[in-house]
Image 1: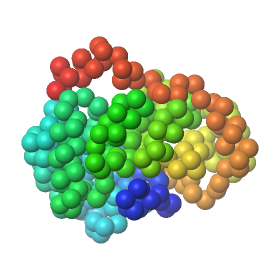
Image 2 (image 1 turned 30 degrees about the horizontal axis):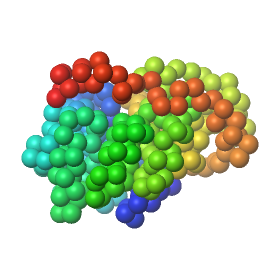
Image 3 (image 1 turned 90 degrees about the horizontal axis):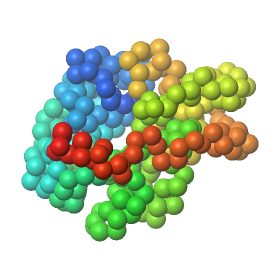
Image 4 (image 1 turned 120 degrees about the horizontal axis):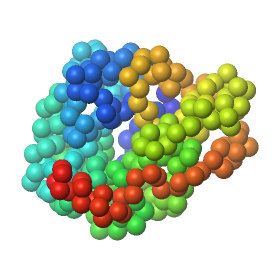
Length: 281
């Protein structure tokens, strides 16, 4: 497994398994399958309501805790220093672990600065090895990073070959923040990646699928990818991407596939923000 070094020196796998929309009752089985395939980065969140299942799978796997990179996220309803601190301890309990490898602010709304203070404290206390944000678009990220003491080590964004997030890369580079891709194979209004003729043609050269090429393109850019599947066979296929490398010409060819650089979710839409806050805040 290839890794990337975060700004604080922590090594993070470039490929992981995400459990967004995995039902709580299925989480243990899915994560167990992912771990058996070889995944060592598991990405969950308080809002997914499946941290318990993730924790059960990790404990029952028999794999050393230090060999697993565990990510979770603080939800809007837990925003603010006091509530965030309490929620971090609750997540530790559900995940059955003494520490979280990467803790993110899930959305850029609510008292994010209060949440960050709680996360900085957890980081200082060793409850968390790295901290970052999720779904912070370029302007919001710049503003946030400018005013906090510990700069975000990761920004998790919707990113794939059709949503390449090239516009935010210079902003992230200023704080040496690593990009992490949710929806690396589509989802949320993105279709066609696994059936792409361009990716399929490139993959044919290496005996790989279009999906594998899409994931390899991300990881070669230094972007952490967390594909999700409930099928063990697909998990295994997604995992087999480090035994080949795309050429510079192929990387450039895929770069031309970009369609919506900042993603299909408009995080600046007042109605979307209103919905999130009134429903989940």
